[in-house]
Image (tube, rainbow, N blue to C red):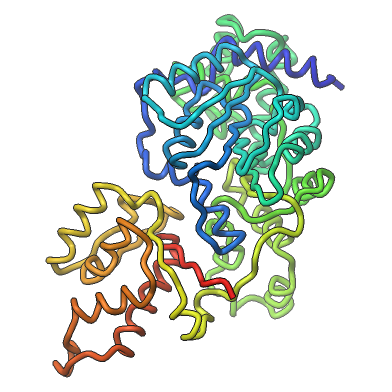
Length: 441
């Protein structure tokens, strides 16, 4: 088995030859709002602690920053945070620095050309660590997790992911095939990519591996070809094995990053129509077991993408749907950080004086599902663009917007307004568009 140094040299050669992602400096994500949302540290803290953190002064690490595309997103999504990027490829580091300079990123930034296992050597500690698309390349993922844990602040959070072996297996077959012909060794070459393309296009169209893996863009896109068919060090894992890695590193699972898309019950037409032993079995399972069963039935996600941290952190609270009126009266309401934009301001301004529905999912996709709000809610949400608001302020605003009961035309009372605001905030929080914070006891 290769040792860490041998594997890193192979990987370094690939990313020195073609830094990832291979985007020009002036390129920004096609769906910038969604991309920033995926790199916002506010959300994982909210999922764990039920509190909304201020990103100013926080220390954020991009472990394996590559050419700086995600580092740029981390800076933009976390205003005022200190940004640190590490990578084993000096060429990638240089590109990342240029990218931040080109986009005039104001966050303080530092860069180090080191492997993840040497993180403690930089003598920094972090509130949030982004290790995206990296861990599956390490010869010893546990060593990488332990190194990140060593520089994680006591209440810090790590985002980390591994390839799903169930979803990715078809590409591992391709990689193994071409390894028999001397590929995936040393620096990627034109000859290697040409050999791969010529071989794959020569396969009969009915060959399963060709049907499952070969995409038209692989014919011309070197980056996509290398990241799939010829990726050095590429490894996959199952959900139980990933949880075992976390335990070996003394880290505790917090949540899947896109947790709404990992609902086992939603895979069934009607959970109540399942055999009673299956339905009860699912209800009694741990979250880890449910995630594993989800992937056995529906290996849709390329990445097992999750948040973790030191054991014993986090605060519990009842689900929003179970809050008492007393709890609601203490709540503070925040708009999702990626909705606090000039575009959404104009949208809510227009909606406040219009009828119909506003499709929020067109501006921020939380789980890929459509989500709309009645335009009448727009004026109530508008103050959230400037600052979080106590529940009482939104109720009072609703009374001003809707002073009459729309059915009886009598003067609306505060109890009616409270119930109305509570209902639409519950739906918005469940969908991820607002964050609700209770006053600490």
